[in-house]
Image (cartoon, rainbow, N blue to C red; front, side, top):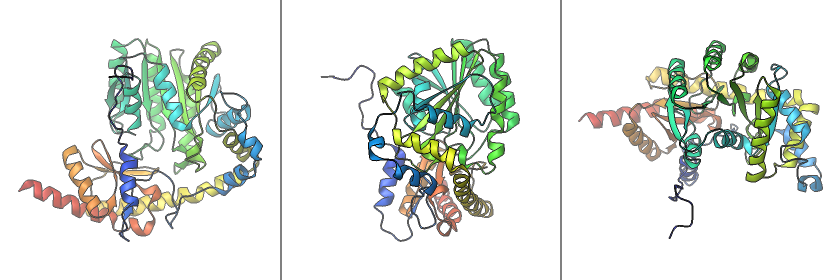
Length: 404
């Protein structure tokens, strides 16, 4: 007897990150490396919590914490703060903001509300697994592109534009999860030119969950100015994660920014998405929005200094792993910045063998398509030293066994 609607997947959901992380936490070997956690951890393997944010959050009166936000679209001060923090007046076109349940909520709004069932969503073929989960849940098909090849992305966009009345494409840049890559200004310019030339409506969804941890913050934001050049057929949407920016992962707070040339079209899109906000989560954490707004107005320079400590730490950690990977000839995908580095495994069967062998050696990682994700954001430098070489030795052993 079926109770759920036709088409829903009723099998047990086994999230690859949380499942392996749970195994890592139960491993009591003193040398264990938990490379699964996509959150900032310090050198003592404790989760980082920004003093600038939590000092303000903790001082908010309980009665205010208990209150609903002023609107299901988000507090006005929060929406203003999001625009200031993300775009900083670089975009002059009409803009809208909706408070969302983390960056995930922002992404799901776009995937849910802009395509109809059986339409095709364009995704990177190496990506955060929840993109594909959302597509499946909303009855969509998926067409993937190589996130390391702009020409492949353009080819896929043009293919879908020929057969579908609307195009929705997901870009994860800067600080791609799991590759740690970022599109250049030139790449963004070329992409915008292609989108402008389409005869169909196109929704560009830029997932910037990790952009606050790009190594060069000025460069990381420079491409936003290109959004001023979009044609009327292009709607830009930006998924921002306040939770990640403020190291408040469990406080599910984010935002969706919308940009379009026509104010009337922009507001109609925002109104439609606001209905989904109301029906899905109703209201976003009031205290989190207040605290974020106050950080920007009262403690912004202190926050940037606090964050810079961990951007520097991420860079130091990445340099340790990248140097050893180069020296040991461990094959990895190009890395520029961000929380993750990915070991290249073009054969997913061999990837599975490597993943299991690493766990046997007390190294816990996350499988992605054609690779193994290493969360340098949570691994102390002392444990990163020697890690790439160990992975190479284990990989070579698996390769030699397969050749016999």
